Structures are given as C-alpha cells and as structure tokens.
Amino acid sequence: MDAKDAESLLTQLLEERGADWTRENGYIRFRLRRGGMRWEADCLCDARRIVIYGRMPFSVGDVGTALELCNRASLRMTRGAMLLPDDGVPTCRTTADVEDIYDAAFRLREALEENAGAVTRWWGGFERLAAADTRQ
Image (tube, rainbow, N blue to C red; front, top):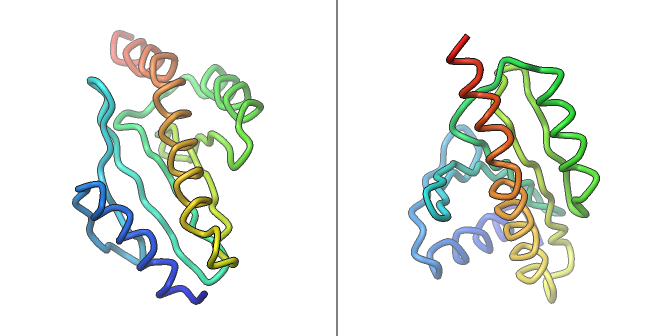
C-alpha cells in the first residue's frame, strides 16, 4: 500500500459514513460529533500508517492539570496518546497500521473509534479546565 492507497482507504470510509472531508496542508480533515460534542480530526497518511489527530475545540491554560489528564487518558489507550501541544488544545493522537492491505480497513476503523472514544471520554475534564480559565 502506498500513501495514495492509504488516503483512498480513509476517504472511502468517511464517504461511506456520510462524513464531509477536505484536504488541507497535506492532511485529510473532517468533523466529528457525539451528543453535544463537536470536534475536528486531521489525518496524515503514508504508506505504512494513518495518524489521526482529534482536536477538541477549546484550549486550556492550566498546563499542569491538563498534562495530568493527558497522562491518565494515555495510560488507557492502546493505539495512541492524549497530547497537549503548545497551543493548549487537547489532542488525541491514534495510529492505524495500514501496511497489510487485508486488515488495513479494520485497523483504521479501530483507530478512529479509539480516537473518538478517548476524546468523548475525557472531554468533560478538559472542558472544565477551559471554562475555569475563562472565569479567571
């Protein structure tokens, strides 16, 4: 599988699920929602893997507490980690190994599901931190 095949695998899955996507700066970008939560995901594809970055729509200023939440979330994840980039936006990164064409779609679905599950599981904690920052 090459990078174009990996991209096609991702975009085909998104289209099957009715998700609108765009290509921006080398990433495949789409929006996700579950309940009242809405966030963006950026995916980077190469011949061996698809890396998914689920970015929450707010930033946090309490870096210490946010990093503690990231650490707790990451300990529960099997395909990635919760990160806090310099912009303060909590970001879930998961990776799908797509080298084997026979199970690439399965691995991609698993990585997308773990990403969405982690974002929604830890949303409340990060959202409370972001709200506390605006009240100060």
